[in-house]
Image (cartoon, rainbow, N blue to C red; front, top):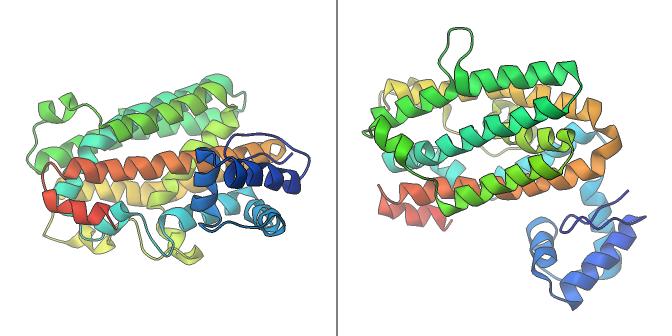
Length: 301
């Protein structure tokens, strides 16, 4: 059953959703509906027939749910106008990387908490095993390797911040707002929606995205062989670069396997998660301003 992507109003057809969106955006000028249309379909006002067509086309899944999620992620973060943080990561400065460290520690803590809620609520053994391994890799350590969380802290230390300073720095409001959004999804949505919302974000480091139309990688791969960056920076970036291909791909396979009856709900929840992620990536740059004020130019791109 089609769902309004701005307020989750349910209707019998995409035309009914178009009428609803048209009413709230063009007549009532309600902010959530206007913003959704501007962000996803058009900054220009669309007549009802065109809006109905564009809406149905946007949510169409001819190649399945996993492909739809990948396509929409690329459009949002790697399309004609990549996210400013990803642009900054093509040649990251100390300020960019420290902003990454200070905000991402909070993201990772929330990440494992939300994944734990999936483990608690699902009855699917393959999902439980997948999520427990993911939690170990991200926060505990796995097969003798340090956790991604530990590697992140070490990256910050190599760039001149003490572990005490890193761990005692609270999140910026934008990061906190995004974290609250993901917690609300975990608390109020089905586990399969939560799984899709979180693991679709791992696509950010999936180096295969260029095969599907991404304009660039998450960071310039030459960094991994460069003498310009400390070993700890390269160690952290390499782990995500090598791991998230498997993590994101397997997660999307599981989402498609168990989410067929909730496809429209998953689509809308994933888009909400993308909004939170875009805000959070910007927070990394905002934090970087404390070390490198000229990053204000990057944020404005």
